[in-house]
Length: 112
Length: 115
Image (cartoon, rainbow over all chains, first blue to last red; front, side):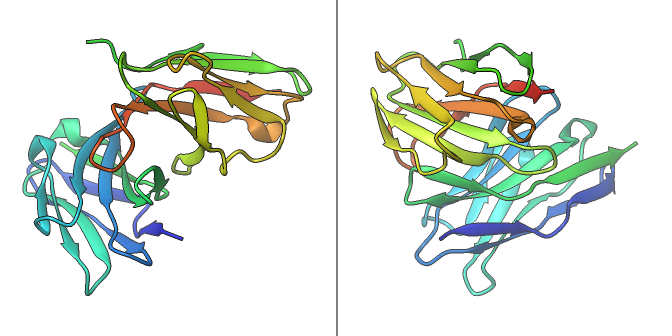
């Protein structure tokens, strides 16, 4: 079965500094991987997805993620954090294309 | 356009009662998914529909949980004899087709509290 592990439950950065949210996956075949964001009292929103094309994936709001098969990782990065980035982020693997398996989430705090 | 709509946004019920949670997907989306998000955890898959039929209900925790989508649009998640452990946010999502190239659009969820 597919699974993901988000290595940090909370990450705190200062506005304007880089963001790194770490995710490792486990999959018995070539996975599809996603990052979703959840702002308070709002629905989950897709940030980006990897589906075996380019290993560096660009998403919305300046986020990107790199698929590294040798490390089974799919870390999310952003060069410069903005206050509006404060939210909870979920790393997700697709199980047979239809069922999404979510990580436990990483809460990102951005300090002014 | 309109997104996925879930009603009610909050539901408080007593242990042992029956509840129904409603999901209105985006118009034209053939696939509909239900997830449950407990406090401090990521969403967990419950069931998904392709059209009117439940294509995969392997995530339903027990036979107290049931979901329908009779006309291939609106779906209702039904929970019988609710227990305090059922308290969670129930999320609905829809997608145009099935598969990872068809992104899921999530609603804001229904927060269920069983007292």
